[in-house]
Image 1 (cartoon, one colour):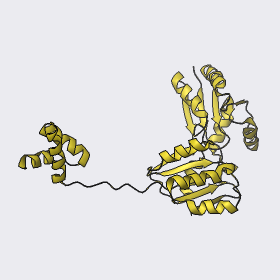
Image 2 (cartoon, one colour; image 1 turned 90 degrees about the horizontal axis):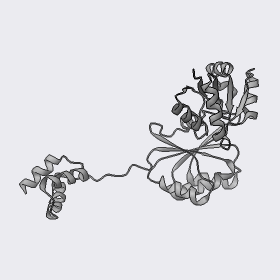
Image 3 (cartoon, one colour; image 1 turned 180 degrees about the vertical axis):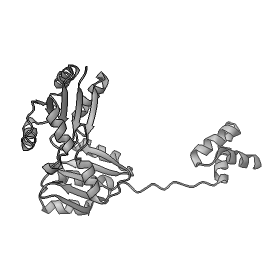
Image 4 (cartoon, one colour; image 1 turned 45 degrees about the vertical axis):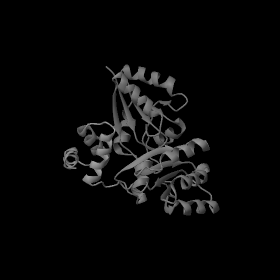
Length: 275
C-alpha cells in the first residue's frame, strides 16, 4: 500500500505561525523532504521534532523525486517543506507533487503561511482578482520582456524580489507600466516588518538614497480597464453590410458583426433587412 505525501506550510518569519496540525504531521511522518536541511532542522528543534531529513531542491530534484516516490510506494509517509511558506509555490516541490499525482500516490496539503497572500492582505491593494508572477529573471532583457508582456494586465500583480535586484526591477517596472501604485512589503511577520505604499516613481527615488534590506514582495496595481467601444445596432448593421459587399451571406455577415460589436445577431439581421 502506498504512503502519502504531506505538503506542509512553514513560517515565513514568525515561528508562532506554525499550526498545531503542521506540528502533528511533521511529528508523525517517516521522513521530511526539505529545501535546505540546515534551515528546517532549526524549525524542528524549536518544536522538539526529530525526524530524518532528505534534501530536496532545484539542483537535485530529478534524482530525489524518484527516490522519494520509491519510499512512498513502499508505504512510508513524507512531509515536504520549503525554507519558508507553502511548498510548490514558486518552488521545486511542485515537481514532487506532480510526480505523486501521476503515480497515484495520495497528496495532502497542510495549509500554512504564504508571503503572497500575507503581502496582498497587508497592501491595501485590490485583492478580488490578482496574479502571482514570482521572481523576475536576473537577465535584464528577459526581465524587461516579461514586464512588457504584463502592461495590459488588469489584475493586481505580485512579485518576489531580492534586495540586490530591487532597484533595477523598480526602474524597469516604471518604464514598462508607467507611474502606478506599488506596495513594497519586506521582512513579513518578522521583527522589522514593513509595508510601504508608494508610486513607482516614488519607490525608485526612495531607494536611490536608501539601501534595500530583506526579502521583498511587490504588490503592483494592474492596468486601468480598457475602454470598450459601444456600438449601435445601425453601426453593427453597416459592418455586416460591408461584409456582404465582399460576398458574405446576410446571415454570416450578421453573425460576424455580432461577434465584433457585442450585439445580438437577430437585431443586426433585422436591421439589415430594413435597409
